Length: 299
Image 1 (cartoon, rainbow, N blue to C red):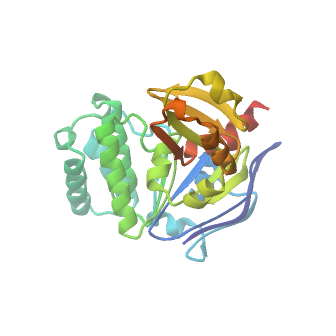
Image 2: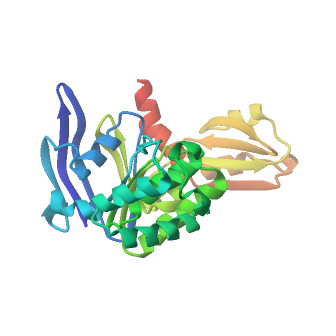
């Protein structure tokens, strides 16, 4: 189990991470969200020991993070960290050696991963000859080839097309099913929604939302209703508690201020409106993120 307890990080006059508390179970994928500069990467680097926290405690299975735990960690950084003039084999083999893997074991694991990602033909090609998407796959292999127990992924889907994105998501889920602990950040809310059970949203280093994704959505009061019928925007906007009305293909997308007013909207619809659809939608993580982070950053 990974535990962060009252963790703070201060750079000169900047309080980058403020009293952060996290507890990650084995066999869990955990989402860490926030706008640029929210403290996500700083948090990852403190877990890895690249930064020392100003205060607080970080432990793995009850033991303070130290060099003896390094081989249990796998890290995919947001920035491209591959050496462009090395071949794929040389790059991966070097990093595997640093994690204590033998040459034979590395060769076997590398071949298996290259085959999984359909890039076996690139084994002896230089990194610079690969597309951005294939470089990202190689970087992922570098992070996990030693079969780590704790996997930290900072924007892991950068540069991937939809097919390769699903391929990588499948491997992340496989690691979860093997009992690995995974924490990752992504600007793509749909990835967090499909992969994570729990999450934390940071704003300027502070936790603004934390918990089970399902419970967070249930507690979110604003709702969107999709309505199909003979209506116009002006009429819908005149109904009490309607915040916004937009068109979404054949539907009117009606946003209300609180879920308890759903019946008010329904009762305002008349027979002559010929309603064919009235669907109350669960709030998306994107909506919640914008409310908790986006508006605050505009202040």
